Image (cartoon, rainbow, N blue to C red):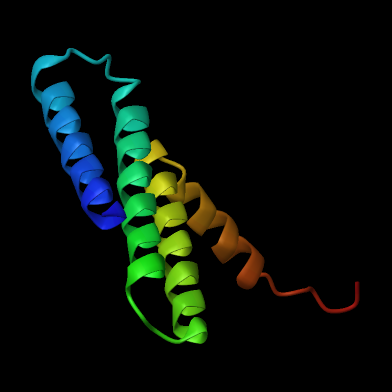
Length: 102
């Protein structure tokens, strides 16, 4: 019964997202925020469904959770426009070579 309720909740979220995207005028600076909130809601509910109702080993569930969280973090950074800066900082840190004699 709970699975049916969650499935209905996902459909309702999808319908609300479609209505908001189609009929509601959202300022350009708030559109990424709406996308992030709806995407995180959807991803969280789907991940909860998988963790609750799909039988699998705990280690596989942990790996799946880590992958989903990392992917969600990367997606949020890309959506708000910070991913390029994170990559630049990472490259600067990992490519740094210390100078000799210092």
